[in-house]
Length: 196
Length: 199
Image 1 (tube, rainbow over the protein chains, first blue to last red):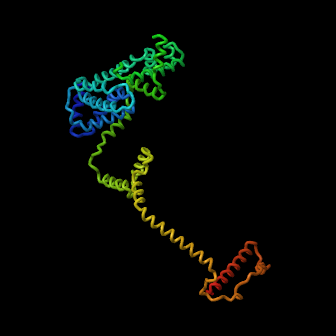
Image 2: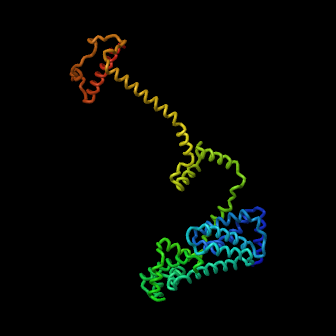
Image 3: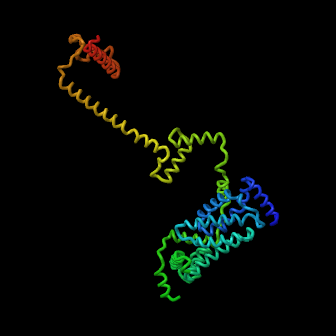
């Protein structure tokens, strides 16, 4: 199915959903929900449990407000993404421990999202890229050796032996360096954006 | 960065326990390369969200909801009541009997004055019974009986059981014991009836 045919089919589903057919709304969410989870909620909230909770809340809000949606040429995904970002923002504001994203980040994303005119695939790529950029920003705020340790062991999931070899230290030393790296990252997070 | 700089940096690092270290690693991993949501798990989330809590009820739902309401008020039983209790106990163990049990507890508290009266009567009754028993023990001569005085000569007397061991009737030991017990029992009853004057 090409893009325009896919959008036509989606528009028909939206009309049926707005007429009260839950099955139609289910089909829309079945298509876009996994994308919201992976590219919007999980990177910002940091854990599968929090992201699943946020996805459930997003669905409830979509059900309550779907009649307010008016069709756009890029389809329904940008609107769903704004709802998910608002849910993520609420959860970030109520968080008790440091997460990678601050509420201000998501507020900025929401401002942009409301003027967004890209389609679902492009938005997904954009969101995944933004999350990686956020990680890179944080790693720039700690010692480069610490950043390397985190990059190899945590992000690229390389073995301890391989990471130790790359850093030119023993495996035991690498374990200590990684522990210090995480402590340094936590310190950077707790200092917030003002110290960046 | 020199070794001295690194040592200074390490000195400033906060304490980080293993759980917090794992949490931070998970945050980073989920931002860097987030994994997809399992499709079965997503379907469950979606179905739960799509269920309409305010849909018009069926006749059966109306009946069951009334039964559950009554059970939660402490009247009758319902399968979901046990589930509700289990949830309550799991969520806040101290408040475990928070469903119908407080009603029972409140009733029990409300009945406390009645219980005080009951215990008062019990104490007075026991005291009277004790006093009566003491009186009876201390004044045996005062006891009288409406029964006529029995003729002691007519009462069965203690005697040998030799006659019950006749050779002709001798059988197995258990049969002999049965014969003795039966004869003694009959004599005991006869004597008792004679003493009571009912014979």
